[in-house]
Image (spheres, rainbow, N blue to C red):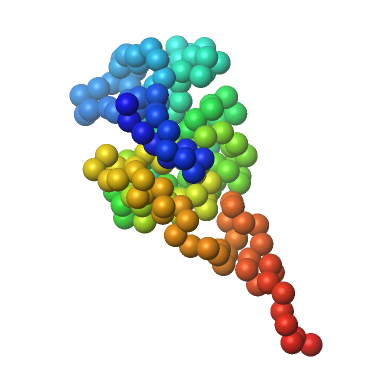
Length: 175
């Protein structure tokens, strides 16, 4: 069974990520039973068929880096898991999607990074609201877990720290 990092621990992952090929039609693709993370396009096309599976915690959704979380509309509150795909290490658009999900849209469930997820990104991903990570299969997950603690202090504000460092530090000798 594949493992992921969730809430700073390595755990077994019982979710399958549905990937589409170029030949697949979002309207016609059959979503298997069980815990499946479907692309946003599939969710939007098959919402009426899939909506009942949310209450059983069997459907989640993933967004590509060129999609917007607001396209989920009011359905956001129903998902226990939303994933964001990082198609390559250098594509940082997923950070903005995660930040917007947490701060503007109030999403409180599991927020998972999938795709080209590497140790070097984890500290910054958690800063914008990710709490689970599907590390790239060819990387050591135990080593990646250490990436969440690479830095001991955060200078700027974000989802995980509401005050900048200068506001959290006592100034000695300032008149």
